[in-house]
Image (cartoon, rainbow over all chains, first blue to last red; front, top):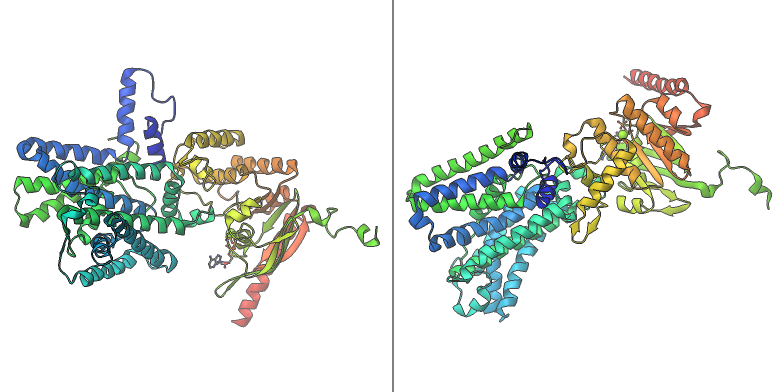
Length: 357
Length: 269
Ligand SMILES: Nc1ncnc2c1ncn2[C@@H]1O[C@H](COP(=O)(O)OP(=O)(O)OP(=O)(O)O)[C@@H](O)[C@H]1O
Ligand SMILES: [Mg+2]
């Protein structure tokens, strides 16, 4: 089922493939039609998993899981970085690319901001902007190596990732640097501890998810992103500049990586060369795939990836609260990811053979 | 008036200004393969030109040069009498040239109506006008008699012939002056072939649309086309009006060429 169908009809609140007049008249038929439409949405599976997980941990560990402290941990600290990076990875995966380096853009971009302030006396807001632009520039380099020079993005971005990590280690001399609280007047817009600014990452996430959901499903950019991944030659033959689309999505992902890095720097009051790395990138890709994005390109959803990020954050946080010790945690976590993916693939297959959830 | 002006043009009565497309000395190589060699083609206003030839003869390559997707290595193109260097598909389209590719260039994951409007979407900035596109696509397909369940389904769910009909409808719908059809009949049932042939007849009757059509069925080609060009190994080896040739003659030429090449190969072996 294509994004375009899903989303256009979702916005209109109609069954995905029915068109007007198919919903029926009676209340019973409307309910059945509604359930059917729900089942046909690609996000349906992951939504069920998300709700089930939240309910499980909410009921089993309600005193600790449902506290405000834990809500911040879960949503702002754990979920937001995964979801924000996942937005970029979804766009890239759909157009047939991937960015392995985004976690190192996360690592490196805050250093640009940091040294712009300390060594070049750039005002803090401007320096934060420079940090974000560093991400965009890194994304452009990824685009250049992939699109213009023709190196597959999987390899190209592993290379740029190493370079970015090396740069971060060199400029920091492999030591974390403190972020003074005098920068908080800018930092609060990204994330700082305490109410209300600790919620900023969640607001960023929700706003970005909504914007890019619209971009993907309701704009030319989204249509061309799907076309580039769905039929690269055909998109070219139709006159679409697929190179521009891919460059753009690499630059978007770079921007989002830098954003998450800067948020983490302000929130933890350190610019740390060991922050970021592969983990947030892998979590973002897993969130995208759990949410229904095809690794082979051509289809995917931003909302699904957002829910996927909630699933991963809930698992991490929930297992932590449940007191599962660190060593077996990876086994359980890995198993949970596999179950989520298998459920997703199998239910999609069921859906395609005509039955619903 | 000079005496020269009264000499009729070599083919037909049309003066040179009625030539909507002219290709001169077009050559194209892909590495060691010479796809086209010194090809000359001309197309009159309102004319339907059939392009025939064996697999790998260079027919699709020639179409891709005409529609701006590929650049020739040498030679020149004239559109409506003026020389142009086609920079892109979009550029060719702005000159009224539209194409149905042999591979159709449809995106499986997108709906029928998004495919119909691919790269010429209706936009109310910043969002797509899905509703208008859906309505117009449906009207257009109904009018053409294309039989599909709904314009909302992804193209992946359609049959080969339905997909082809969508691709043809898309090009016709774009209101092209010069329409290039690369094997539009390949995967079609008898009814759908009749539909496309009717469509071409309709366009022909309008008189202002010129068409180049590639097909392998010589009978169909002679039925629908005013003139045929035979392309062999990247060269045009025959250019005749349909009424001056026959399926038999075209067959004989192609088979004779095949036998000659076979003998040559055996001799050199
Ligand atoms: N993009 C390309 N790269 C390399 N070689 C190509 C390319 N496109 C075409 N060719 C070669 O050029 C020659 C002509 O190909 P073309 O597609 O024009 O043939 P055709 O006449 O359309 O054949 P068919 O009837 O099978 O469609 C073939 O030998 C083909 O292998
Ligand atoms: Mg061909």
